[in-house]
Image (cartoon, rainbow, N blue to C red; front, side, top):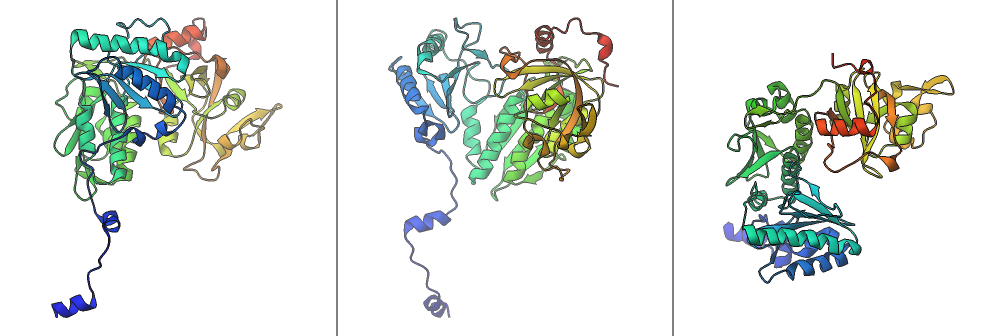
Length: 446
């Protein structure tokens, strides 16, 4: 009967190129090429090629290591890492901002900012006429390494990437990298092991906050330790479990792992980081950082509001704002910087309930003449996706072209979070001439 079955249903004789499409393979030890960086197929390539040649010419011992997220140039370790973007190159230098002679102020201190590549100073290269100035910084980072020797990076980037590549599907790899980026952005320490990636606080790198364990069936198990979040960041265990889930193990698919990156951003927005067991800066009970992304600043300023929409991740943070709170509004486009300071007047409302004054009459904002109506009116009939607005009385404002900004000011991609950075507050109070602002106009959180 077996022979008869083989005659009736013979095994197909398919060429290797067709069979390869159906084989399940794991990309372990993937070798990347320059062409794998999509940005290098665009207009930035000639500038990159010239920069690359100059770096390789620094010394015969310089070699290039192409990774998925960046390109490193090293002796014993990277002295400069390059992250190609569509219209510029992000460079990360293995030096401190204090050590560099940087007369053109091209460098930015990113010691507390998550990023790919090794280095505490970021510089951007977008034009050929910047090349000489940028190379002067690269030569200093190169010289520092040759004189002082190798200093190990804070976390094993190669180890993390090797672990991520053990996930069999590209979607899961991308999702895991998104979590890593979120963790670095929030000052967490990624620690890879054989099949797991543990995230720890910098104050104690042996203590697990949460762990992602790769399974063979294209799933990742999430293990979360709410008590550790409470000890090291002052976060309530209930809030940790609401954002990240129960202690575990919780099996997650790629889309759920990707969502975990956003939830981690939201959770850590209110974290009180500690250093060596001591609490970090406390919140003053009144000041918030707010961003409205690419929404119209003209509309927000004219009608007195801040807004967010597109889902709970963006809308929920608005609920933190209470009447009397002071908000500092950051606008990343078209020129990044802070453009307004105001006082919250009402809790958030869905767009269909928000009214504004037009020619002395109160009308729904949906009927008001707006500079960019589509930014406000989208999904108006969908409570889950529509814009939600918080009424704000603007105290001081600036046009976007004159936004207040300097390197090192606090920013976050969460629409609303408590502003704890005293250096940022003091800078903005001076930039917006708020020293004479009556304290009676700003009340602390009830």
